[in-house]
Image (cartoon, rainbow over all chains, first blue to last red; front, side, top):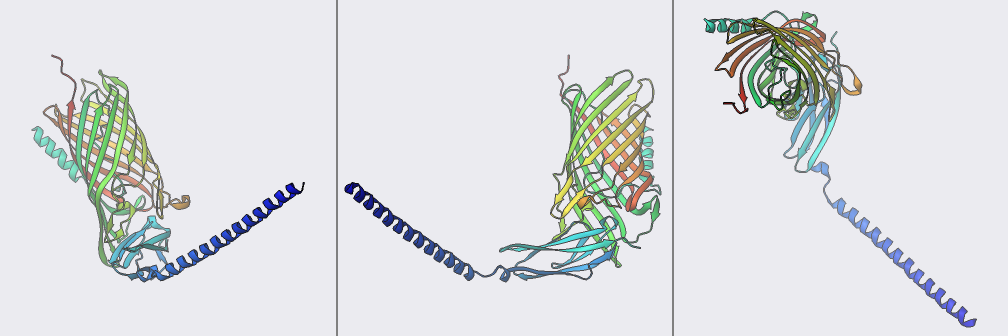
Length: 139
Length: 317
């Protein structure tokens, strides 16, 4: 009987020992992963912010509400080098005046709230923004 | 003499510009063709190519001309090639593809003249035609057909980085499905014959970026009288009614200034030579138009084409 208890005691002692080692390993993994994540964040911080090389800060228009055939100018304020600027409208006509400014007007079939999108891209990627123009029927 | 008749009719068709309205410039292919919607015999091939010029100038409000000084004119020059092949004795396949040499609009806003212009491939049309009734005496044919138009052409045309408006894009940007019925009848001993054509087309919704757009359903009914002037000359006086429903944009909002009902007079002159070849000249002259809201309307269009037939049947000796 004593022998059996001793055997059980030895087994339990070993199990507790293994469990302690397991906990220490888990703790070590947790600390290493924390360090790894924090190191990665440090590395990300070292990279330059995207806006330094490519940014579309704002789209400005002379008027947000117009009547049919009224012409307005829309300008995109951008940062970066070798920029390619693309303009599109879901309804209405656009005509480029220079690379960052376009003329916009709407015909009778363009009445409504229309979306004008500007996409700016270079070797760092593409950024885009929109502006909404309301076109009303001329009285 | 026949040559002079041909020239006279050609001039009449070309220059008969009435003070009426028609269909404005719109995205995708124009409804063209040689008004031959018939089925072909087995192993027969028909090739037809045409050039079309269309000018839109006047603004209309409902039935009346409305003075809007901003749009000066809108026009296109379009080339098309179509092939029709008799797959079986009653079943034919038809395909067509066109190219816009230019599709342009000239506007005057704030006293500045601007021109927006595009060019490129239009939509690819595919049709299957089934001859339901075919008789020899009198010559008659009843054809049912169904088809699809695929927007394989240019739909992202731009000028200096600026995408041009939807109505000036060479391709419609949407799949369109159509069904039509064509009936032709002519007695062998008579110079007169007639045909009728009914066509219905529905469009899928375009969903590209911020553009959500659906063209209104389109219906056409045409009734034509055919007069054989001589062995080689045929004159066709065709009248077309075109009914287009309003287009819709996002959230199913109907666009007020779209959709129309137009009646066209469509005279055609056909000169056949060397048994397999034909020159076809026609014009679309709008006689009556009712437009929803305010729309730019068509002044006239003219079309000239060349058609030929080939037979791949083995000749019996």
